[in-house]
Image (cartoon, rainbow, N blue to C red; front, side, top):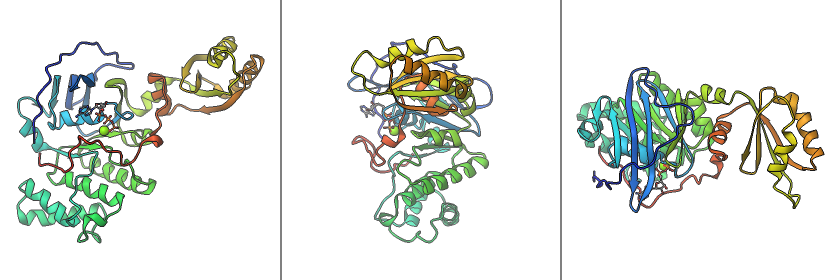
Length: 361
Ligand SMILES: Nc1ncnc2c1ncn2[C@@H]1O[C@H](COP(=O)(O)OP(=O)(O)OP(=O)(O)O)[C@@H](O)[C@H]1O
Ligand SMILES: [Mg+2]
């Protein structure tokens, strides 16, 4: 593994954490404090984040493209060096004993790291060799994994002939060869169809039930909501919110009415809408968001008629109105002012600087 030189750029900005600061209760297996990573030339990919992952939980790192998810995971897994801050994994400091950390973690990179020329079984054998798993034990471990990920029938076929879902599953099982305490999964289901995605979720849950701590990054709200015990929302290198999916949704404390407007050629419809709605009792907040406004209210269904009438009186033509109970989408919108659309993610989007093959850790 190539260790990158640190850039020596020190933390120069304070960070605002929208919902809560660092969690300190429980038995933490990962502690990240004021982590900063600056890439050349002065790209602040991670800008002073702090969080903890508790032993035995599924921790989700949710954020859009370029938020800093992979960078954070690479620092924690010792693949790249941080600029500043501190990272402790199971009591071990990444700066002091990176090799000791590598012994207790498994990592499935965002980019699948399997060798297409080898069969599934051979890929797993190679991984066993890299981790010095004794031969006799390797075969039984491989058989067990192939069964668990439902690849027994395809085990002796070239991985190059596998579907996207099969490749992701094989890749995930490669990360399990060292029997890690903590498993890092960087976007484990990106590019998978719903059926394959559910199968991977199920498998992640089973691993977790057996006591493995799981750190996963995702751009899918639903994935974070369904899988994560706790999560951080990260955007532009900052943690915007942190908590359980339920507490984050609860932090909105209201239903959400999202509105967009038809072009009327005149003044900014958002300002006009805010003015028109100002007199309605029961609205707790009106926020300008991409494409329109979001209205937060405890009993929004009862208010919708008044909202429509008030906008009508203000000569504002509604293009679309949606009423939702809070979802993580709304949480993201509340803390960033933007919608996070996972469907815009290109499934096989790849970065030229990414590692092409899995490396022994
Ligand atoms: N090696 C690098 N050199 C320069 N800039 C980088 C490098 N790696 C990442 N970046 C930049 O750092 C920022 C964060 O990237 P990162 O890959 O951590 O985001 P991400 O949240 O994983 O995004 P995605 O969902 O697209 O995988 C981006 O602006 C990216 O372009
Ligand atoms: Mg990434």
